[in-house]
Length: 78
Image (cartoon, rainbow, N blue to C red):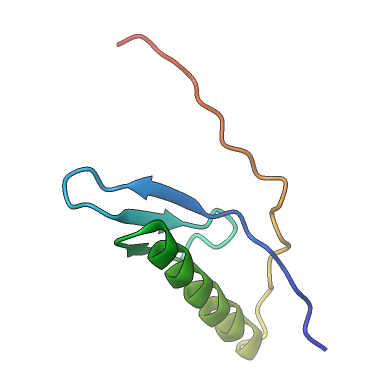
């Protein structure tokens, strides 16, 4: 029986190139992107599924969902 998990996904605008780069803190090996938010999220979902399937096939740990992840902003003077 499959267990549903959810992961925090960070979308960062690519100011020069356009689109968004994507990272998943719980799965640092994933790096993907998309031209739109929708495409970036779809690519992230595909990448997560592939990484989890690969980890499972190799008997590696499947990290817990990180639904408590937060992004905060900190202002600093430079």
